[in-house]
Amino acid sequence: MAQSNTPHGDTQQHPIRLYLVVWAWLFILSACSYMVDYFGLVGYLRWSLILLFMALKAGLIVAVFMHMAWERLALAYAILLPPAALMVFVAIMVFEAHYTLFNRLAFFATG
Amino acid sequence: MNELSPTALRPEGTHLTGWSSVEADWSADQRAFRTASWGKAMMWIFLLSDTFIFGTFLISYMTVRMSTVVPWPNPSEVFALEIGGHHLPLILIAIMTFVLISSSGTMAMAVNFGYRRDRRKTAILMLLTALLGATFVGMQAFEWSKLIAEGVRPWGNPWGAEQFGSSFFMITGFHGTHVTIGVIFLLIIARKVWRGDFDQARRGFFTSRKGRYEIVEITGLYWHFVDLVWVFIFALFYLW
Image 1 (cartoon, rainbow over the protein chains, first blue to last red):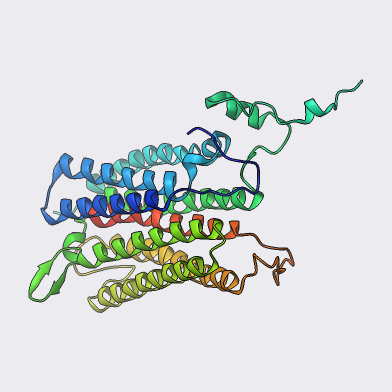
Image 2: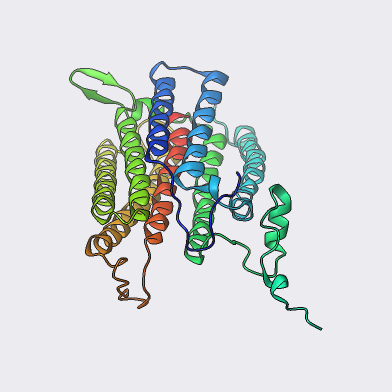
């Protein structure tokens, strides 16, 4: 994450080769996630592979295509840390969904 | 009292790294984003807000899927197609994914050629990006028509939990709208590049400001974000 560039108004100049390599990796990772479904993997193996390929693809897009790896950390943290709040939201809604499901089964189940 | 000596005004802490650099930038009593122009910083902040919008959509999808007592329709089967007598699960979605990733690749290269002042290549790559984006939207329209013909509605579907339809139309519809806006945005900027607006310092019709090639990178940020959102939709909605 070292900062190498230039003052404001500068350019993000990187070799085309870098973009082609990332592009190839995105293709490979997408093919891998499609294979997870094609071969019908299930259970923890499926979820962990899906999430792994998802995280790798997202990381490559943000870091290289969107140039976040070359921005100053002041910007990177300002943009990348707030979405962590969504993880808290996910945790809250997991509790909420379990509670709703429990109530549906306890009071509305037919048969 | 000579507190505003030139040394005091010079940005400090440019040599710092890690957390110290963040602290120095934010407490500098100057612009916090030292190397990002306002245009780029504002696009990033907009994308952050958009992250929360899509995040909330995906979280509500998670909530309804976890709390329903009716089985969730199997996306692998719902989005399967028969091609040449072969039954291929999720094939259309896989093709859409590759199309969108390719458009991100051409966009990244357009940004690169923009900064090299290569008008022709920049415009062609941006038009190619727009074309791939339009292809994506076209395939999405096909997918929607197919599902609607099979009886999927926001309030029900033939295979299971009713919330499937509302989640599907809401999430993919909002994403498709983003792609469509991106295509329009790309076409407008590609026209400006082609005409040489940024070489001749021509003034824009709306703000009457002179543009710079940086707008190609800012357009690219939006476009890559659309691809980024699709990565999450593909994993969490289609593959889960």
